[in-house]
Image 1 (spheres, rainbow, N blue to C red):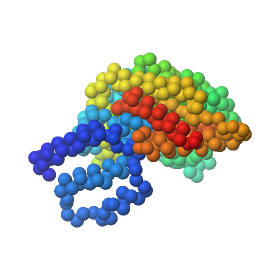
Image 2: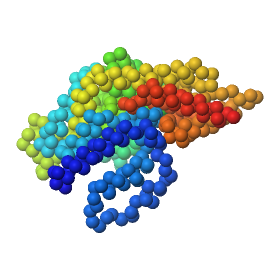
Image 3: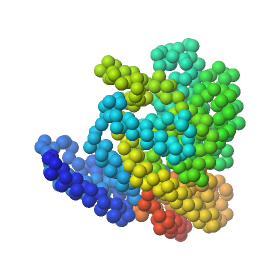
Image 4: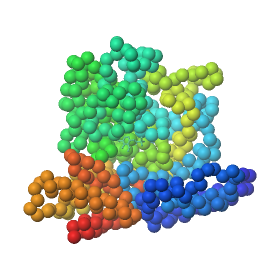
Length: 480
Ligand code: PLP
């Protein structure tokens, strides 16, 4: 493709994207297709000869768009609602054009050094201390897995060299996380070969926060049984409810037993850039590592997760392996990304975060997060004011957990709860089927709970009012 043609298609594509964002609110949020529909429309084998760009782009409209669930739709309230932003898209575009593989400093000095500077900016915005040094991975799942690997390296049992299997000298290693911790922690433990039994889940209190006294008791019990505790994962902003583990109370327990404290702030860490919300990460200044996902609540296109780590030396010891063909004269002076993880080549992800932070500025980003929290609290106030609905958890950030709780006459309490579960599920499917909004669910204390997450850069009070109306319409309809 010559420069002229590239320019022409490039302009068309940017126009297409601008139109997409202008019309996105009229598209159904949830893809309106059945499993297999798209596959059935695609040729089973590749084209033998190249095709015109115009035909390919026409198929994006005809085939791909209908099969999309539109995460950038302002009424996307499911999971943790997240969205890209214009500067983030430009960052991706440039990164694709440069196509740098930032494995060594010299293969992409720009990526390596911009990553260090941009992550230091983010650290300052979050109010974290300079001892925490950032490194980018694709997702929080991978960031946490690397944090646990560094923690394991710190136990000094030559696991890197000798592995864990077939060793009579190695006790069962233990990691602690609350019952509400994200499944990625368990997956990381599985991936590292620690085995699922290495994870001890700590009970939570009524507000879904880890109970420090239960943590302390579990560690003592495990030590008595001859196990080797080495890591605690606290969560700031759990996935189901966005609850905040009491990090400040967990810190002294970790210190007492010399355990690595990893904080999963994948979702809520971004809120710490709002000065009056910085309290939510209190205690994290004592953490050994912390993960935050700019691709969740900092308007940065997927994927970009940041691991802040106080002991990069351990991370490096766990993963660095440099064959002759990757040796460079400057290696002692620079940081090379491939020394800190499983991957060799790394995408130039820092670029999009750098564009986002520069374009919006700290204040612009904080204002948007603050507004999302205001909208969530507004929605929660409607729930609280209505006799048909109830809140299922506190609302510390921009996630509301709630459910319909209508009365059913002469019904025993277990039957009542079961009926409410069925009703709430039907309400959620009813709202989602309209295509006008998308919600997701969880189970809290075994009860079906609806989740409304606000994190989209285009979401305003208008969409929050709309989804409230939709919920009430569905409730009325289903009660008839
Ligand atoms: N941790 C928490 C608290 C999350 O909510 C999630 C996802 O929602 C993750 C980790 C995993 O994130 P990722 O998709 O970046 O692996």
